Image 1 (tube, rainbow, N blue to C red):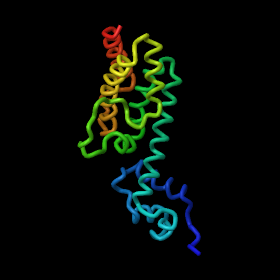
Image 2: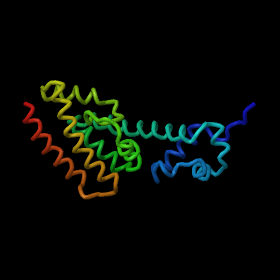
Image 3: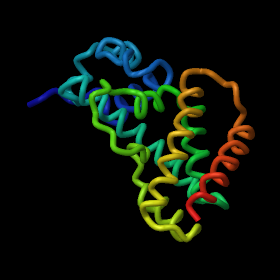
Length: 186
């Protein structure tokens, strides 16, 4: 009979999640997690087989948090703008999770567009753009790509701790860019 787990999967994941939130994924090791839990590494590995599994659980939880920001953006008076602003707000509020989700990789991936990764709401946002501005799907994708790259720049600044713009500044600049771009699509 296997030993009874001292901690639940949820307890371990929550502790790992908070560690990554504060200090980044690179600090999440079996020893550092055991120390945060106040135990040895043994109880961790009665629930998880590898540290990689724990990291995957943290990433999934970070994605859920990110998606809650985007869903909140979709409830804004201008949903498309709301999504962009919440994307940036996520980076400001959760810089380590932003870096984990959007600033990792080895650079070998072939990128063909820049619709935000991990976004379950992409098709909903594209539909909103098409219907709100009476443009076709290709123009909606192009508009979304343009604004996503712009939003990524602001978000990356926040994630790196560079706070040279307020959210009000960003709101104004994103609106100005959107107005200039939408004219070219109409």
